[in-house]
Length: 146
Image 1: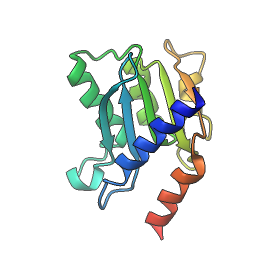
Image 2: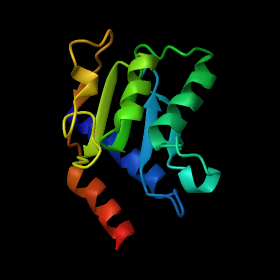
Image 3: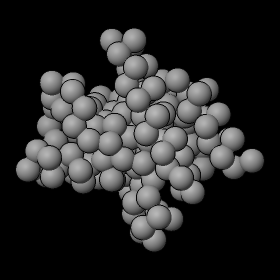
């Protein structure tokens, strides 16, 4: 499965590259059968929407495609550790698995500052795979901010 997670992350990196003037973060939502259901990249600047993080965009599109707000059995692959807003959305959507690349020490909510997704007080806790292609994901962000 590690090879599959890397392949999914490479797809998320390709999605991130399409972010234009936004911070290059990409997300891919896989359906329960592990086929691509939806993608999203940051659209905060393009849409003047502070909630348009890659994860939120992909979750909204995936929920629309499935016709359900519950994404049980789905896997979210994202190039950057989700923030608290995105971790909350992941929990509410009942996404089963989260795979992320680079750690986010300033706002990360899946182990860096907080661990919202694995907090025992939550009613839903997805499986988490952290640091997949972390160097490549981090390099994309460092290059953008240079």
